Length: 191
Image (cartoon, rainbow, N blue to C red):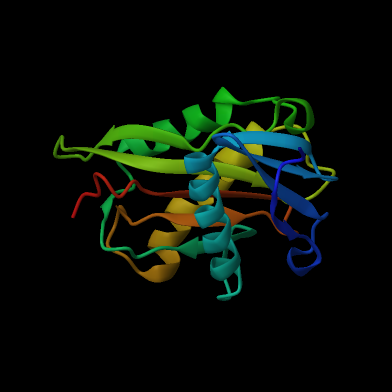
């Protein structure tokens, strides 16, 4: 028996058609862009929320900083963006998947990273990087690092936040080939 098709999308997001199937406790995404991707249902829903957030964020006229399109979140939490743990975590995340072939290995799972505020309080962030073009197949760690740096610095500069204040955000290359995002994991947001 063929798995039930949950959803089929494509043209409205300017990408190859994708088909979503539920198979036992996983969601299988198939399409022309990067082959077949298997993920747990909870990971699928987190990724779906991130994708919807991206679509909404990009339709809200993103800012431009050092050539990157950026979107600054304000979800009621903030940390010192100049504190090394944010910079180190994003760089480590980007380098962890350096050279990964997204067609053969698929996207990595949503990265949940434990960090500390400058005051030593623990919190967690969710990080991701997405490809938006069929030509972007190999994970580019340099682009990933640059996008995170542009987002963290750009939100402070362009939104007029106090020095070091960071509340999460998303960034993309222009033209949109790659995008990254970081936001607090709801279980631990510093207030």
